[in-house]
Structure formats: C-alpha cells, structure tokens
Image 1 (tube, helix red, strand yellow):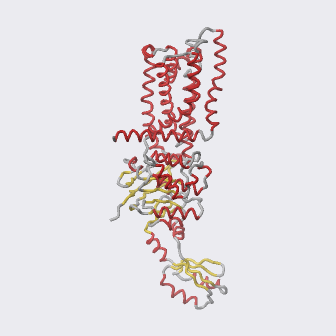
Image 2 (spheres, rainbow over the protein chains, first blue to last red):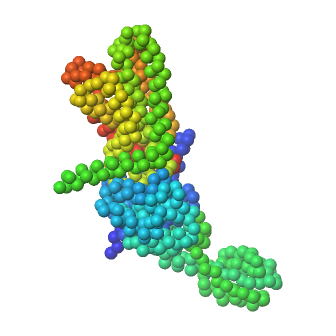
Length: 304
Length: 273
C-alpha cells in the first residue's frame, strides 16, 4: 500500500485587495500525493500554483481547510514539517553577495547538518559547480545559480521538495540536467510549472490548475489515455483543399479543422472513425496522411 | 549530553545568522565606513557647540567641560546602535526580494536565533569604532574595571532592546513596507525626546516632562550616570527607576518582540516578492 505523504483537505486561500476586495487564490483544493512520487502542477500565471506551494511549505497559512504533510498538521506542527521539506521558489533562492560555499555552509548550519564540509564538496561535484564555490554568487550564470540552489535544498536531505518554476529561464541542457537529477532522487517532488516539457519528463502524476481550482488530475498514464482518445491528423492536399475542408466540417466525428501549409490538420473524437474518414478521402488526391502526437501541452491548452 | 548538543546547535544557528550578515555587509566595504562615520558627522556639530557653550557656563546639569565627552561617547555609541532598529527591517525586506527570507522562514529555525544572530552581527559591525571611542574616553575619564564591565553589559542590553524593536518593525515591513516608514517616524520622535546628544536640563520644562515619560531616556541616562558616578552600588541604589526600566526592558522586550513577530508573521506573512 502506498504511503500518502501529502494530503490536502479543501484548502482555500483568500487575499485582501484594495477597496476591501477579496480574491480567492486557491479554491477548495484536495489532493493526495504518495511518498516518492513526482507530482507536477500545471497552470497558467495566476492560477494558484505558488500559493498552493507556499501553503504546503508552511510559508503562508490557508484561509480555510488544512493539509497533512508526512503525518503532521500544516498549522499545528509547522516546525516539525520544516525539518522534512525544502522549498525552492524560482531558481535562485540564495544570497548573491556571498560565495557559493558560504551560502551552502550557512544553510547547513541552519539545518544543523554535521560534517558539512565534505557534504558540500560532494554535492557541488555532483552538480558540476565545485570550481565556482569560492566565487560570489552574483558572478554565476542562471544555470549555476539554479544548481547551487538545488545543492542547498538537497543538502538538508528533505523528504519532500517543493519546487516552484525551478527551470524558468534556463537553457534546455541545464533543464534536462536538473530533470535527470530530480528523477534520480528518491524524494517526493512537488513541482509547479507552466513548462509542459519539464512536467511531462519528470512527473508520474499531473494536476492541472486554473482559476484557483484543480480542474484535472491523474497519473501520467491516465493523462496519456486521455490524449490517445483524441487523434490529430495532418492531411497533405494541394488541389481542392477548400472543398475537402467543407466536407470535413460537415462530419460530426471531426472536432476541428485547421488550415495548414499544403494541407489541413483535423482532430477526430475516436480512433474507430478512421474508416469514415477514408471514405471522404476517396474523392480527393491526398498526398500525405500523418498522425500527430498529442502532448500534455495540447490537453493543457484545451483545459484552460 | 543531549543538552550540550542542543546548546551547540543553538549557538551554531545563531552564529550562522551573524556570520552571514557580516559577510553580506563587508561585501561592500565602504558601507561599513559610512555606518561608522555617519554618527560622527551627526554629532560633530553638537560637540563643537556644547564645547563652546561649556567654556562660558560651568555646567549644564551634570554636563561639565570636564565630563561632556562621556555624553558624546554614549551619544555616538547609541546612535550607531540605533542603526539596528533600521537595519533589521531593511535587511528582512531585502531578503524578501532576494527570496532568501522564504528559505529562512521554511527552515526549522527559532526566531530567537534570528534576533540574536542580528544582535551579534551588529555588535561585530560596530566593534571597531565603539572600542576606539571607548579607549579614548577611558584615557580622559578612567573608571573601575567593574564599572566598565557593567557599562559594556548595558550597551549589550541596549543592543538587545534596539534589535528587538527592529525585529518588531521587520515583521510589518515584509508584508507592507509602508509600516517601516510610519514606525520609523515614531521611532525618530521617541529618540528626539531621549536626550542622546543634549543635556536634559537644556530643554524647556514642558519638553522635560515629555522626556520624563520616555523609557528610552532612562536607558540612555543610566549608562551616563554609571560612568559618572563610577560606583555600581551607589548608582543602582540611587536610580531605581532607571535600573528597573533597563533590566526589565532588556529581559522582557526581546521575548515580546519575538512573540509579536510570530503572531504577526502568521497573520500577514510575506507579500510582494
């Protein structure tokens, strides 16, 4: 039986704005995350991702509802939770005006880590920043700052990592490196992003959040099945493109028809509609038929 | 054994905060020079004026041409220390934008470590000018070792009170920076009525009555009195109100400030980073 490490119960958060206006940043969120799971939260800007992570990492308190993190109540036992978690908001939660080593040493002392010198060197080597440790962080590149921040949060050996947009502004190589490092770790990862690629590569469970609410949640397989139900096809055609478009638009099993260069892109409701589609094609000179893989991004765009 | 380990951890965490603060401050070395010289510039005019004034008048209250440098020294030292009130909220606000404050707030970390870490780093910051000034004044107005120790402890107590106040302002400023400036106006008013660099007797009577209601005045005055009287027992017995305000504030104020910090932080949190 899997062990639930994060459970939220009807979490909501309201923010007071000017003119006594209240904005609901998080609305009735109830989720469960198992130990060791890599959980991805996808949503557009302002959807409530950072608010949810801030509440779960004990940075702010919810307006209503509660959460249990590794058996501890988020409000009553916040200090106990802080021993088991690490938070990374963005990719550079570190001091710029001191060296990388001083940064790591400081956080080691704050977390009461013994024999930190060896641990710092080891983790810095693992992340490839050992040569830069004695330099001021302000001289680091964005990727190195991100790596240093990851070193910082991993040094305290937390059970859960809360990461809010950790790969924002990083190049593909660094992003992939970070994804691999997170994948390798046995820790529970709760990551929020609007980068679908990161979530798709790293997470085994994904939730979509929009307008403060979780609108869809499922395992990667469940999300994949959801995607497989719908089929997108590119039809290569040069002559009679307009006529074909008209014919396709009349069919109820086709949900969308989009004009593309040298062809059309259509979306079918179910795979078994292929036969009906081919019967339409018989009247035309089709030069290419290609099925397009649907990504989580496509589902995300449709959901939000 | 467990107790010793716990004490070691408390010290380690507190000194970690202090070390980090000092490292950040000395990143730009002229900042420290500015901090040391600003009170000198501020106090230079009253020193010149009072010196001239005292040439004609034998004394103003307890201030005489012979001892007025003690007043100048305490004034200077307290003025450097008042920077603790500004420094903590400014530093916390800066850390809010650096996003290192959320990292600290989500760490298993008692707020007392934060307070005492700041106190230590601030004392390290002012150690050089404070010691230099202290030595100079000691040459002109020597006191017993016991009085000197008590005076240093009093400055420490003053640092604790000021830092506590800074932490109090800090928790408000990380949710809304306007609080910092509003409270700062109040702080300046309180200090204006505390006779840091002017003799109490120089003020007209209505202002003297206001000063008498200001606890900060008693904190500053007891340091001067201890130095002038150079007899701890006499000073403590003859100024019981001063002494009780000082000891009470040094012990209770940091506890109240940390308590307020926790309550307000839970309520307001961090906003705007």
